[in-house]
Amino acid sequence: MKIEEAALRLHAADNVVITKAELVAGSDLPENGTVLRLKDAVPAGHKISTEAIKSGEAVRKYGQIIGFATCDIAPGEHVHDHNLAFAEFVRDYEFGIAAKPTEYVAEHERATFQGIVRADGRVATRNYLAVITSVNCSATVARYICDHFRGPALDAWPNVDGVIALTHGSGCGTAAHGDGWDYLRRSIAGYARHPNVVGTLLLGLGCEINQLDNMVADLGLMPGEMLHTMTIQGEGGTNATVRRGIECIEAMLPAANTIKREAVAASHIILGMECGGSDGFSGVTANPALGAAADLLVRHGATAILGETPEIYGAEHLLIRRVESEAVGRKLLERISWWEDYTKMNGAVVDNNPSPGNKAGGLTTILEKSLGAAAKGGTSNLVEVYRYAEAVESKGFVFMDTPGYDPVSITGMVAGGANVVCFTTGRGSVFGCKPTPSLKLATNTDMFNCMHEDMDINCGRIVDGEADIAGVGQEIFELILRTASGEPSKSEMFGFGDEEFLPWQVGAVL
Image 1 (cartoon, rainbow, N blue to C red):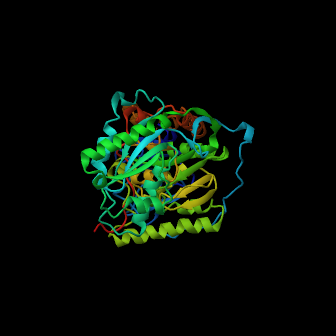
Image 2: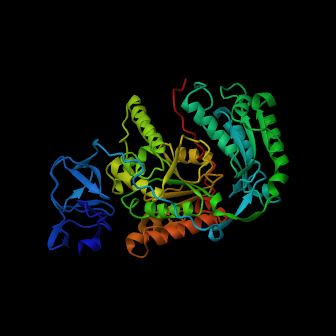
Image 3: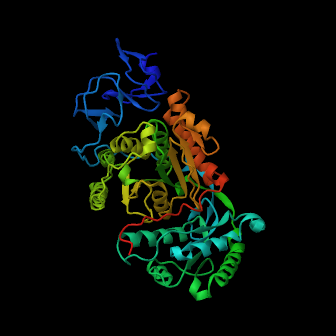
């Protein structure tokens, strides 16, 4: 078998290739008049050296450094965590050298979808009522209220997608200032004012640090017909609060049901992009295909959000090359510096990734993972950098500072306004995130076939030779529009999304 039939060379400067399928020890792979003989069995998605690499020398994939050899590596050897490791190295930050004018699609040719236009002009892709807790102490009561509306209880209200309890583990026992405090309250407010949430009941215990009245006033929320607050202590206990909460939701149902979908411009899409359960194919198939879809959205006037700061670590110099201004690039570098300090303060390092599942799938270092993850950002200019859960107001490709942990990261993006999420996965994530639909993009065909009931698109066809990145990117773009129009995602069919509201908790728990 020729090497190009068995493996992928991603860049001419690379000294490794990526296996398309598992290869057995002793396999001979001819290339350019020479033969690589594999010393070991190599799983699919893993790396094979194509030349001698001395201890301490850089290993390159995507034309970039992914780590350094910890011993001499011979041609044909399996390259993984037994002989490759992360190490710091100097990266050149060339602000905006690759930025280019965006080729926008003409207004009359831009794509549309069937959206829900709210009274203030914002556009929703779903139509939920939500009970959002100010503190963990009110979580169970919030669920009791929402449980009343399961099953046939909403049959008379066919335009309401559901009544969801958005609960979390914080809201008290913490300082009433600082990043963690801001992230929690911005997340709650972002969901409460999200276009996909037509009405909200904010539910507290009553004595918590995160007082509802203060939060509502500080964050500019406006109580009224479709936004209510109550506390368990104020209502007289659990049963009284459940009864009152049910009455509150029932009073909002008629207005919530009075909606219709209509054709709106694709520019109203705000896409959140995430990768989780990644593997060696993530940066080859699903991530660049999602990047191609993000580029299409940008050309149609929409917004695409890249996040997971610890998982673009080591690839940030590539994003810096595409910033529209040095000021935007400096914002990104400030966040990178914050993460270095934050992890050090907590006795960790930014290179705490990849996870065991990532490594089993072929990823070895955070540099390798980050270079693949950054491909979700496509090729568009980076126009803005946002803090966690800040409202995303810019059009185009933007970055949000989020952790790599999937539910925390996506919570921030949805709080920022994301009304569709695309989630690439190589090991098989089943994530959902009400009130925003989540699409799963499989990186390889084997996993897609194994978990086809959970996966929305098989990007593994790119490695299989059945499709290319641009073609799959177009498919993702079209599926985003159909999903925004109301077509259910696989995770929605399963009912995922009630448990995945997870604001980023930073700071001391007191």
